[in-house]
View 1 (cartoon, rainbow, N blue to C red):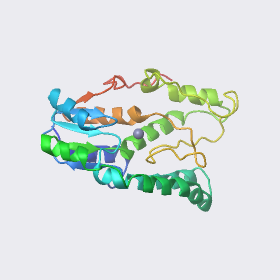
View 2 (cartoon, protein in one colour):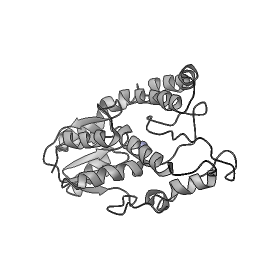
View 3 (cartoon, rainbow, N blue to C red):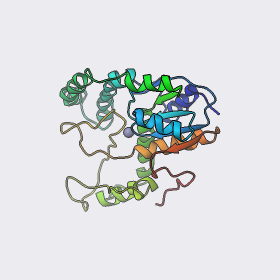
View 4 (cartoon, helix red, strand yellow):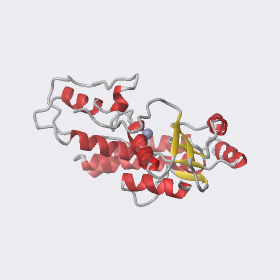
Length: 245
Ligand SMILES: [Zn+2]
């Protein structure tokens, strides 16, 4: 059994983060959690579902309210670091995110940020949002998986390597090549993820729907500590995480 703090710490450790990022938060603290509802999006209905399914707590992926919802957009600036790591000059990267960053900032002001955390409090349900740490775990897993591709690898080979994960094989959506030909050499590859949301046209719009890739790895780690995850999708693959390469 774990408390909410230990759940958050486990995610930070797997993502190699030193502190809780702006888009993640412990909304309602709790101890001795065993059965936990895990959902990409958590509203009041998911809280009631958790209660109906006899869960002791809830883990949300997208910010379920509070500071994570109001200030989570600040994580968007991670795009600058990822672009720089891919060789984009610092000033060009900064300019590329500027417009969307401003839009994200303004967008959150009218949101009803207290409704879900407050409902969780009233229901006595511990509630945690873990957003970019999960995405970073997923990003690292992809980076690791494509590391073995040689210089002549094509875009098709790159896609099939990423698509080999059970999360992508079981998903209804397929990974698509939106720009260019699958037969071309992949060349230098940058994996853009874990920056709150995709960068938009000026940065990178091709976005890998790999939420469960990261979440599944976190849940496996939590399971080792006696947590029983109850997920709102069948894309959770307990103990069946092997990658066919
Ligand atoms: Zn995500």
